[in-house]
Length: 346
Image (cartoon, rainbow, N blue to C red; front, side, top):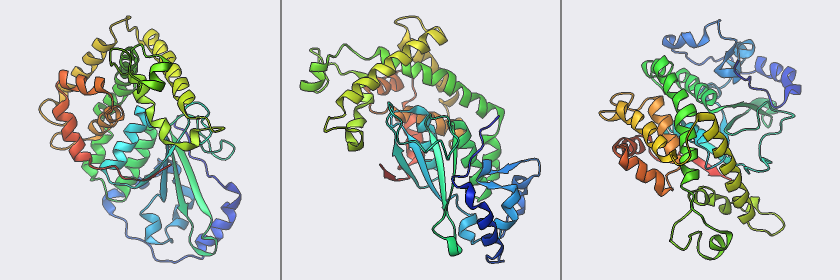
């Protein structure tokens, strides 16, 4: 079953209802072609961002309230491919969002679990919608988690507001797109993790401190490159100590995770790169003539691009894209997705 989004402040629900009753009676125009979104078979609308029980009351709000989820916050690790999928969808549809970087070790920046239901894994989407009227400073906050659930939430919102065409939305719900999304989670991402771990050369802490992370052969550890972004965030420093210990801890944690994935997926020692190439060639077979979506990317294209973009700073991934023939597809997706829609990153 899908996780429910939980209100960050349930104590004010009764007061909010009174506020809805006193709001303007002007109702926004709803496109009849999207009436399926309000089908009674759904318990929640947009996975709980609006609930069916208070939909009629919310209809009296300003049009701007209907047309937006509010301010979006994505809790993420910069090196997380699951977060990369969500960001790529937001970027493609040019939906502004704010990123909150989370420590992979402490996870102290995540939403308070006493107020919000989530599994303490990134990505987590928090939608904060300001309330109009006398209690305009009250913030209606909802969260949802797991990358595919977040993407489904966003797609429901996009078709509801007319940003995504109905035909495009229906394709995103097809079994073939869902199968590829599952393939990315269960094949592509595990093989990426294992290949990156295998590509992490023997680099000592002395090399990291005094030789810019390169060993005597001028080789750079892929895992070190993956977590180098941590030093850009002063909030991860503690007691005037740099983020170097945190980067080292993350590297060891990543290595242990890769070992578990090798056992789970039966990847023989030394075959990590070959298995990754086989997986990426499988995707190339369906995208060598066009996008998976045809003349323009569909959700499968966008999600796969978001995963690979997460590791764009690793020479290993650039090399593998060339060797598997995916460079042209990747660059085409990069052009279609465009610039990041992120407005703040803290």
